[in-house]
Structure formats: C-alpha cells, structure tokens
Image 1: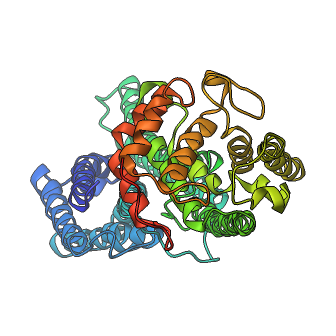
Image 2: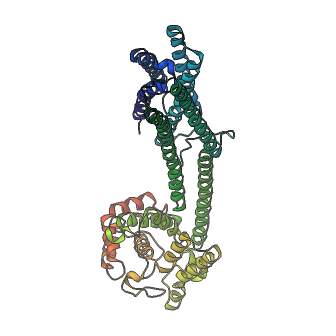
Length: 498
C-alpha cells in the first residue's frame, strides 16, 4: 500500500464522519435542548456545517504534512492531535458563536459541549483506529517499525476505559433526553395525547441509543480489524520461522502488548539468525578441517575438492528444473549437497599410506582395501550423526561418502547398488569425481583433455552413470570447463590431446 492511498483512505473516513456529525448533531440538538429547538433550521444547521467543514479542512491540512513512514506517530497521540481536540475546539467555537448571536443559556451550552464531545470521542476513536491500521500497513510495506517504550496502556485497560466511557455516554445522553422530554410533557400542548407523547419520547431515545450503539459497533469492528492484522502478521512470522525461514520480521506498528510481542519476536529472529550463521560457520570449518585432513593423506590436491564441489552444484541446479527432480532439489538441498561434497573421500584417512600413496597401479588385494574407504567415511559420519541426532548435512555427507563409487548398472562398490537405489547425491558425486580424475594429472596417468574425458563419460552413460546426470553434464559442459580452468592445479601439466 502506498502513502497516497493510505492518506486517501484516512481522508475518506474523516469526510464521512464529519458529514454524519452535521446530520446527527442537528437532530440531537433538537432532542436534548429546547433552546435549539426554538431556532430555525438555517440558524441551527449553518453554524454546525461551517464549524465541521472548518475542522475537516484543518485536519486535512494537518494530515497533509504527515508522511508515512518517515513521520511515525503513536496512535494515542493521533487521537488527541488530529481528532478529539478538533471536536472539543469545534464545540467551544459553536457555543461561543451561539452565545454571541443568540444569548445562549448556560444549560444549553453545556448540553452542546457534552453532546459534541461524546460524539467526538467515538469518531476520534474510530478515526484513530483507522490511522493505526493505515500506518501499520505502510510500516509493514516499508519494512519500518515504531519505536518501543516500556510505558504504554495495556489492552485490558483500553477495553475497560472504553467500556466505562461508553456506558457513561449512553447514560448521560439518555438522561439529557429524558430530562428534556419530562419538561416537554409538563408544558406540552394539550392537543398532543399521552400516546403521541410516549411514541415521540421512545423515538428520541431510540435515535440517540442507535447512534451510540452504531458507533460502538463501528469502533469494535475497527479494533477487531486491527487486532486481526497484528495477530495474522505475528502468526505468519512464527509460521515462517518454524519452517526454517529466518528472513522475515513482524511489523512493530503499535505501542502495546502487540508491539512488544512483535519487537521481541524480531529480536528472537535476529538472535536465531546469528546463532544459525555461527552454526553454519562452525559446520563449514569442520568440513574444511575434515576434508583438509583427508587431503593431507592423499595424492589429490585441494583444488580437486573445490572443483568437484562446484561440479555437483552445477549438475543439481540444472536438474532442479526437471519435473523428475524438482521436488527433491530445492535451494536448501542444493546448498547442503554443495557443502557436503568435500567429504566424499574423508574415509581415505583410514587407508594405509602404503596403499593410499602408492605411485603405481594397485594390486587386487590393495584395491580391495582401497574400496573400503567409502564405508569408513560413512561409518565415521554415521557415528557423528548418532551423537548429534538426525542432521540433514550429516545425512547428505554420509550418503555421498558411501555411494559415490556405486555404478548405475550395479557393478560399483561398496554395496553394489543399482539405478535409483543409489541416492541422487551419490550419482551426482560419481560423475563429478570421475570427470575431475580424468582431467587431472595423477602419478599413474597424464591429464586428459575435456573432449577425451567427455567421451569416457558418454561411454559410461547407463552403465557407470545415471543417464539423466550425463545429460545434465552435456548441457552444462561449458560450466565444467570454466570451473576446471578457474580452480586448476598449480602443478598441472599440459593436457594430453586425443
């Protein structure tokens, strides 16, 4: 909602209320004040119209200088500053005019002050609630908040105060009407029967009661709308936080219990963001430490970890737009796959140096031992997962460690899984790991070119690799080349041509 529309709504509400004041007060004055009844319609209505129009113009000019959200006004201040004070001043002006023009009786002046004050209270309360609602919506759309203070009027006290004032207003107005009608009964024209008098009195009481009841209901509806706004925003924010979204906040748009709840909710979210960032940082440092530990015992370089990490991310981001994978590969899952990928060979810390660092080809017995590293890593990560409880990061890390050497046709290790029984994380890592091994120089082989490596990957489609993952590789091969160039090994030699 824009600032202009907010002010327009406030102005329309004010205009309607001021028109009702002119209508209601003109009728009310005749009902409670015999002196006003003696005036002509022109003498009675014109001062009321001029006074109310003047008050409306003053209020409009005052609000025109008010700009949301730069200027923030507490609703209770708006009640006095923009609304109720205008009605009190209008009543005083109206009484003063009648004193000068018609030698107004003091009793009539008090009735006018009381009547316009009571009507002004209800209208000011409703307009203040409208003001609060429009300001709250604007603050929400602009992402700003009202300042908070420990000193505010509790909602229970507001309800109690409004109920008491409402009862006093009803009693006071009914008393004035009854008093006037009793005097009228004593002095009435004898041509008016008691039945006609009774109906006239009932109509007057009903009219006044209807006005007060109508405004009471209007105020209750306006407050209920505001209450729903605050509660809905609070519940929406808490619902988002419970679903893991910490990029939300609740608009602090009132200085009462709802404002305090919103303020502390936002502080809680901020603290959760800090704690979550610290946990993520700790997790990333732990990943770096573990992957670096595995790296120190392996012939592979740290650049291998970076490259395979980005390869997995590129493949996952491509597949997330495919119907077959879209439900699984959301942004959070892709981030976890990216962060977990460096731990794919963490199990190599459990392989003897004589085998892990052997410069030549492994014997069958040595290769059997080497094939244990996926399960070594998986068991280590499973132990951590058991200690910490179910953890999505550790879950993906364990999957990748255990299954990145499985093959689509079931001929891989350590468990001989086949097809989609292999977790997608393992299938992505399988292609990323093999591709990087092919383009990298090893003690037992030179670095292959991208084209040669690509040909080997294609030969493994449907046997070694998931066909969908191979298709993703083909669609993203330029990204693979860019990653390989950006994170190339410093000691890499010129690649062998086909």
